[in-house]
Amino acid sequence: MIELGVNIDHVATVRQARLTYEPDPVWAAVEAHLGGADGITVHLREDRRHIQDKDVARLRELTHIKLNLEMAATLEMIAIARRIKPEMAMLVPEGRHEVTTEGGLDIRSQEKSLRQAVAKLAGAGIVVSVFIDADLKQVEAAKRIGASVCEVHTGPYAHAFHAKGRDAESPAVVRELARLRKAGKRIRELGMRFNAGHALNYFNVEPVARLPDVRELHIGHAIVSRALFVGMREAVREMKRLITEAAR
Image (tube, rainbow, N blue to C red; front, side):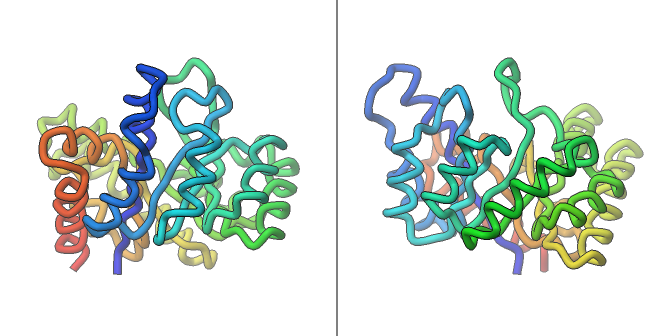
């Protein structure tokens, strides 16, 4: 059964705009759970632009579904993850000047350091995921460093979908879906879990949810945006219905 992980970073973005105490990401996590979310994702960035350390600690204590901590593979973040012990830690590239994560982690260029990071996290009982582009060489490198999960970057697919008139049968979209399918197949052949995410929304998610063996979709911005109008619980419920019906 396909699962939905809800990223609540941008609930914290609204709070940080006023440096106040609301809206509370923990409330958002509870509402997402009640809407059918299978997990909660947060990205604790080096610059703390949205999620704060106290948010991660409170989410670890108060959420009753699995917690996925997105993080750079730095000594600081590894220490925080080993202390907090989320169910999953996802290693991502990170740049202070990017608006959001702009591409997959280049594992091949830093295999030694990433292998050490994975070992430290796994040694603390944390499932380790890596966020990568739909590139078979990166998939194979993920296996070499010991990752258990590959989350494949769906941004290029989502951008093609939007640029081509939201037509799932346009050649550009079909090409990107084929790349995702091929990467997912290789991930499964190597014994890793196949997750996907980035820039997925209510209009483009169904073709991705139909990919063979995709286990989890992680979606944030679209759900938080919809929640402004219908509430978090209903926004999650709508997304969960779309992906589960597509996966069937």
